[in-house]
Length: 279
Ligand SMILES: C[S@@+](CC[C@H](N)C(=O)[O-])C[C@H]1O[C@@H](n2cnc3c(N)ncnc32)[C@H](O)[C@@H]1O
Image 1 (cartoon, rainbow, N blue to C red):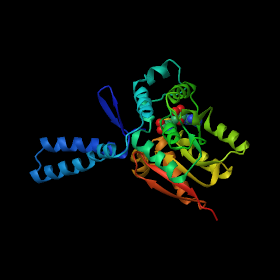
Image 2: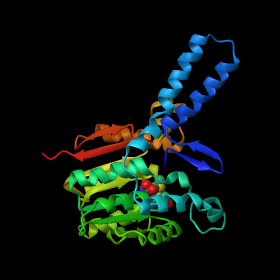
Image 3: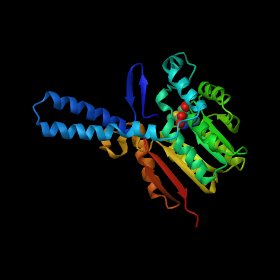
């Protein structure tokens, strides 16, 4: 999901920081109309500015996305996803907020360059932003296998890939991801870098299959999106959604698994980087 996405003229924050900034903005406004001291008002203004400035500054100081990625993001934001679902063109309600976006895309690109990965697996492609971002960093003989369950969005992504010189490095598997993982494992495939970003309730299954079925290459890495899920895993458990509970459990299982080491980066909605420990 991108940090906040303009819907009509309204932005919906979908990361802990975005939500924090929106809440702080409300508190600052409440304080202006309440009888609080100038000192408290000033302190609140400073706190708000400190938080609200982070995302725009990251955008400004990070290498700009390619024209193909910018066009893909624009096309995604213009698509009437709710209508597509009510017309039964998509099998589930998709939304533009699912797209990872500039900062995360550039981060994934950097990981591909840093690891020298050649074989990449993406679990959960949507309109293809992260798949194309990673493909841009691959050598000519590198490839991305991208799993997507929804045929409509898979075709949407494939059309976007045709607009990029790197699109031919991506092959799309349209099926439930667990089925595709089984097929890839049976074919003896293994991947240097895996990006998990599909059904949060299946994250544990993806993780276990990657490790148990040899899908993760010996020195491979797994990157997992939304591991902060809008703050839900560390907020009071009784307020968690089904996905929040699934992510809380996933994070716990990864933290307890002696086969791996990991770091949860507070990038956007949380990005965990996992490495298998080779004994
Ligand atoms: C958050 S989006 C992926 C965003 C994408 N990685 C990006 O950065 O733009 C999640 C996608 O996973 C797909 N998905 C959900 N459950 C799936 C499953 N069981 N198998 C395959 N794809 C699934 C959804 O249809 C959706 O397109």
